[in-house]
Image (cartoon, helix red, strand yellow):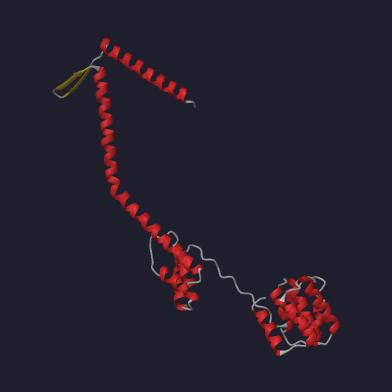
Length: 279
């Protein structure tokens, strides 16, 4: 909308208001009308236009009066609400601070912040969950359990714990489980689980190659079993499979060293630490 057009609209509105005012002024002089109000022994006489002006003025005055009264009446509630909002913001800020200290691997500082209870937080259950985790990292197990129970009591629906699935302790049961659902971490246990001889293990594991030829863990285990049975050609074959998948992997390098120089106690210790650390 251009400036000229806005100016034109304003002039038009002012012109209409001026024309309406002149028309009403003329009507007031020409035909003022008559209003009579009688109540008990009292009477009030006035023109119709005076009555309209008094009625409109009184209505506006009452509206303003009651409006101000409502605002004044709500002032204590508004002040209480403002304090509640400020307290809620401070509590939520403390919750975020505790989470930040926990993320920075400083559970002691996090627990100092989260130990203070606040009823104005938006997420009180999260407060105690973070406090429980901070206490757990500090190995304060009893405090951690107490905070966890407090958090669960505030939750409407507490998720059930996911059961930890343990690998079978029998070799054939482990093989059967892996056939249903393959897991690389469980496949690394095929070398030591149970009391089967290495050659028997190797024969059974060869039957898994068809469906899991791209398994890095299976190649490592088969290499170890072949080396323990002194099957050098088969061991080199499985080492080549593993090297094709990940030539720079530390476990592949240890197997190469083992195949060339034999297994020493230090090499076996290194290999076990690599497996334990999930390398």
